[in-house]
Length: 189
Image (cartoon, rainbow, N blue to C red; front, side, top):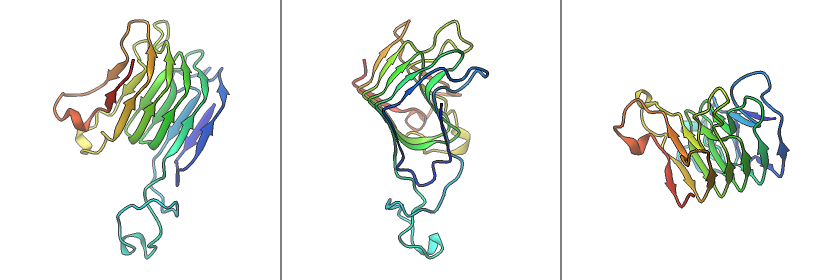
């Protein structure tokens, strides 16, 4: 499988891979998994809006990642894996596009700035697995206690083939401030 721990400066490309037969011993993740826990000072060309003084005198540096792209992959989520693309633990600044995902959808947990588009997702959330209720896109942010900023996520022009016709799942503690908790969706089938 592919695991990106701490996206650092971003601008990574994961493309044109066939990944299968992963997650054989645990009941989480899938062929692709990312974690982001740390903000780094990088020279990636992204304007973060902070002054040089705020960045220890480095005016050309940025504390915001450039977008990383996960595109044109064929991920088969076998055994007990849950997600074909699992953006976990605060992952941010990802563009997932033109992928073929089988037996698992996309997950976002405690992250922001994600774009998921033009993917074909076939049969996520298989009932016989430990987490059979997962969908093509799942939102696990449920973080109202830490403030706003988790809604910069866009899910559009994807095609979902699910057993029950349900494409989305949200895990929210309440329904207030939905615009700050869930992603924006349009033109999905």
